[in-house]
Amino acid sequence: MKLTYISLICILILAACKKEKQEEETPIVSTCAADVYCFQRSGHSTVDYSGQTTRLIQMDEMIAYVKSAASGETISSVQLLDMFTNGNGAGSIYFSEEAAVAGKALDNKCFLPSVSAYQQLFIEAAQTSATSNEASNGVAGIATVMANPTKKYMLDANGFEYAQLLEKGLMGDIFYYQAFSTYLAAVSSGALETGVAVDPSAGKYYSEAEHAFDEAFGYFGVPIDFPSNTEGLKYYGKYCNGRNAAIATNEIMASFITTRKALVNGEVDQPSLQNISKHWQRIIAGTIIHYFIEAKETDDLAVKCHVLSEAWGFMGNMLHNGPDRSWTVDELNEVRAIIGDNLYLVTDEMIDAAILFVVDNSEIELVEIAFL
Image (cartoon, rainbow, N blue to C red; front, top):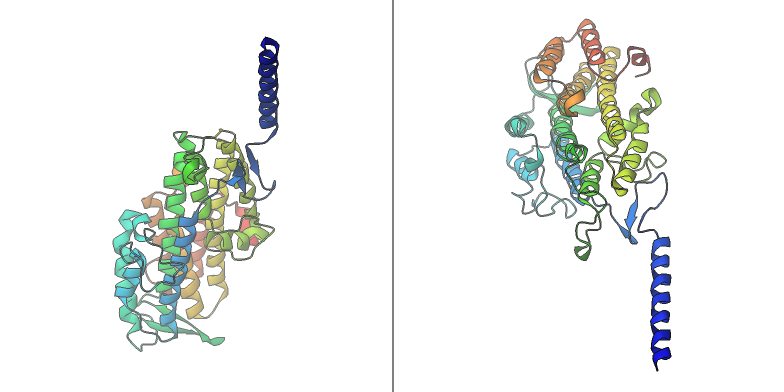
């Protein structure tokens, strides 16, 4: 009996050792592929940026509504405000089911000092849409592209396009601002837990740092297998790919993946975080210059006002690139003062001066201008 008991104990110990060895050999954390933004823990995905995806869709639908005014539709500031707040968080009746997710909204993620300016733009855009004016210097209305009469833009009295001020401005004051000032700043600080799942029983297999980083990535607007896959690019992802041939901006994806892998291992890779900051700023600065160059190359005032409005909106983004690469409010005001407050009056000399300012105050090199 004693020998049987001892044998049983030995069998149990051997089984436990075998089980422990098997567990050690089974990877608890893995990536789906080396060049894909896909990470797992114990067979479960640790990537979740569904809230960011919802807000990208909300932006799509709100800006599409604003742009409909250029085709003759009268838009409502009440509807725009409801879309901005997603029905005060309850789900806007003006959104698709995909966008009207309760608890997800644009307004409460927006850089607070800018919120009232966007609300005023909603009002002004709606008022202009109710007129039948043809846009001209001093008159808000609809501008028609000479080479393509079906292409139209709704401009204010100084030539600024409402849709671009809203879209490019909100990109910076929501997506870019949240990515850097909230999520990446928290990851960089080292204050968030790394490598330990938040709450597996609730399906939260990610750590605090992993989740914050994923949310920043979600605002970038690319598929997990970018840049080999460029389908469905949104916002910064679209402009990243658009500038890549000129200044290799798609390199940012490798830095996203490298940083995320480090977080899986419980580490904060500061050099890779810095690369994300550098490349994301290059996307914005390069796009500003790209639009300035387009403005110099056209004789069509409708097109010129359109692309200058895009550049103007993107310049505001430069406030939000973290402590090392952000512009101050004074610097933003300085470059905008070069362009002036009336896009109908902008000259090539003014554009050249603004381009040089951007180069002197960004990660873009002077020699790269020729490729943008």
